[in-house]
Image 1 (cartoon, rainbow, N blue to C red):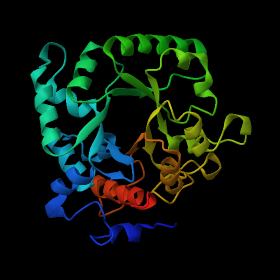
Image 2 (cartoon, rainbow, N blue to C red):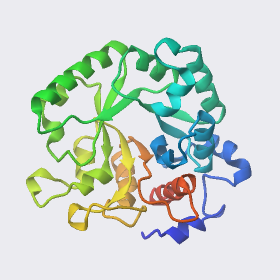
Image 3 (cartoon, one colour):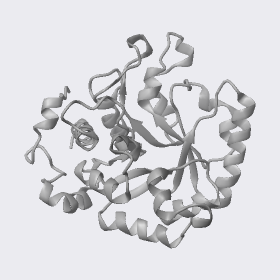
Image 4 (cartoon, one colour):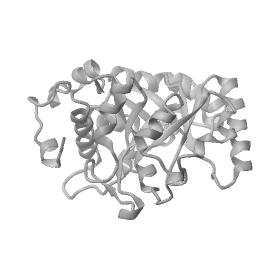
Length: 295
């Protein structure tokens, strides 16, 4: 199945079984919540960074609705200015913030704002999320990985939530086989499938197909970051969905067939074309995911 950019831009209502026109965005997102045959597609709000410095909750809601999405990985840069931190932290503002998203049919499943602690846990639970994300420690430093994992495991057990490790190109097929990852079942994986492809080398003992990776760790993968990158041999480029070496169009039928249900979050990292913007591009990525899922 080949899906090109022109097909995305010209989809319209006839090709959209789940998403309606602009006048019905809210109603349709509430109805569909960008769940395509069981696969929940959302977005990490990092995708909207080009709209900075003003990325308020109202901005994020607007962009999310424009993209036809119903769920988010919400970054702290949107949360903390609203709820405050330190002596300025106002717990009641968390309820207000959640209500803003609830009223617009948007749920938050992950909060990305540094390592978990009591402050972050209160925000996490208040927003209805269940997971915090952060970077995988350096695999070349096993002692550090063990220390970080054990500390995170204690906090996750104390505050009853998950922590999902996000990867750039530092991981390989064996990274999560180490004892460090066995510290707690509350330690999960935020698998960036594009970055993993970009880290491909010729050393076959240290790389497996991304879909095989998903199968191997499916019970520990909380979410998957969606982007399309080329392999290292092809210069590890970030490209529009369907243009790189990442098996995005194969991912959705694979997840459906296997019955795996991680959150799948668009992370816009390719260059935004002239005349477009981040919200429009996220919508194009979402359309790709919907068509790839067979919806």
